[in-house]
Every structure is written in C-alpha cells, then in structure tokens.
Length: 161
Image (cartoon, rainbow, N blue to C red; front, side):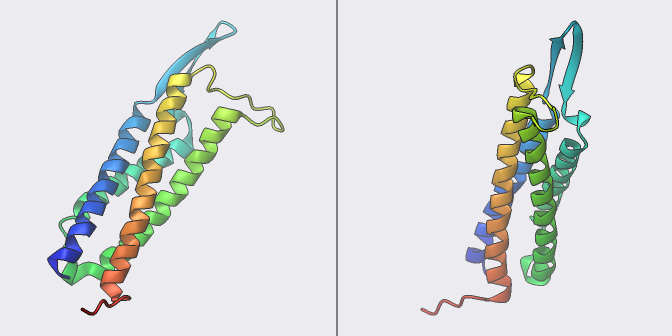
C-alpha cells in the first residue's frame, strides 16, 4: 500500500477516533436532576445498562483506533480489516441500542405507560443526543473506512492510467 492510499485511511481513522472519544466524554458527563412530587431523582448515563454499553464500546473503539494508527498496513492490512469489521459491528449495536433508549426517554411509550423524561431533565437529554450524534458520525466514518480499506486490501477496483 503506497502513501497515497494510506493517508485517507489515517485521516478517516483519526476522525473516527475523535468522534468516539467525543461521544464517550459527552455521555459520561451527562447528568441532571429533577424534583418530582417532592422527590429528587438523578438522570445519569450509568443508570442505563444500554448507555453504559455505548460508553464501553466507544472507549474500546477509541483505544483500538489509536492502536491501529501504528500498525503497518503492508503486513497486517487484512487483519486490521477484520478487526475494523468487528469494531463496526459493536459500534452499530451499541449505537442502535442507545438510540432506542434515547427515543424512550424523549417520547416515552404510551402503551407501556412509560412517560418521557426529557421535559424534566433536559440537560441530560441534550448530552445524550449530542453523544449519539458523535456516535453516528463514528459509525459512518468506520463504514467509509472499511469500504476504502476493503478496496485497498483486496484490490477490488484497479485504476489503470
């Protein structure tokens, strides 16, 4: 793999790493409290196992992306591609699960009798929304990274000058 093929991979990987790092930091700092009927309750990301899963996967992805920047592409390109696919699978699963919980928090579920909480704890909901946006950016960037890497590793498209 020559330098012109390697530069976009590094750029995409750095963007994905920054995106997952931002998603982690914003989600971890999401907390708010509200007083309802004289009782105070706190909304934190670690109250939900799904949001904790999102944070753990984002941390793992950030660390993996940083480590993958130092892997020589000529020797281990196929292995990194497989690991990228695994990381993308975890990113998609954690993101979609967190979006489901976020939707319940924002809209509630009238059939189950669950009320929306975003009216009482808007700061928490804004943080979760921002974190999910950063997570979505990471999913898209990782998808583009895999497509580009797949093309380079397997030589799917050969441009002849």
